[in-house]
Image (cartoon, rainbow, N blue to C red):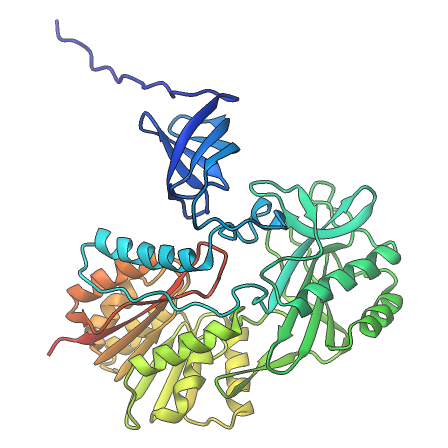
Length: 463
């Protein structure tokens, strides 16, 4: 009689509340240290590679566990001691305990390893960083919650919906922090309630602030659970009196029972409907729902780099796929014959057209369409371009898009990526369509103190 096939289940070597000593050997994409206990991975909050720790097991699942550090036996030389531990507790800045030099090196290594895993031979340049990698974000969307009977703003504890009230967010521009703090104080003074996800009652869901670093213009948005905003006049007067840089105060209505932050309906409470900012010499109009890069300092470096890589000529026709409000398209417009921007979000295309008019640019057209579908249509019509810029969402390019590029055969393609994993995958596919990498892959630290990294690569059609 044949023996039945049996799967032998390996029992985890630890249980909850065990105290064990271990070495931290790596970092996860969530910024947690990784230890191995008899091959069983344990993710350690606040742990850094090269450290030896006593840790308490907090949770054990089938294939991995979690732990917190009880005692740091051997600290990493790259460890940074933070006065404000909230940056780590809330996940606002999960790499803030690692020196900035080590952060940049870690990000370069991540890009290199992902391309190696995709079996692509490529050189990865050192990560371009910032002189001051704190207080860089020009936008914040901060949740509100009732805590001990009054409205508070802050960030959720990692992995929960428990709000931790805070005044400083470490990576946000000080003007943004001040706007959130002042708005919270005024809401408290007027007794305004925060939205409750379970009862669906209460008024304020989020407070958003946007700041034009080049213009000094500030916008505050109150995201409400419905059309009604109690004590509207008093709120407006107090907020505008206490924020000298404020030029726009908006109510955004979000009635959806979901985790989507912003609704599509905006009511101007005071001032202008939009603010302006300047990027690489071009002026941009930014509304409550506009997509605009949150780190203007490195965005300027990123787009200037992409432009230089493209080796643009005055005779070039350029496609800017996933163009958003037109930032890349308008950055390169002066150096080419024609640029066409494609974006599926119609309000973003309206913003792009308005930004083109604002800057007196007349050789840029913007089309509201799904980029892969539009590319496929152009390819079927025999249309092409000399250069294509792509700056897709985290999921990267679709096969339809890549096949359309293979049909259109632009001479140069510059890929700006916010997800090196999908970048490596897509580059692998583009190589199959007759392209080759030209130069080095360049990581850019668009989001210091976090695990995210942007990367730019230039591909050229093989001769």
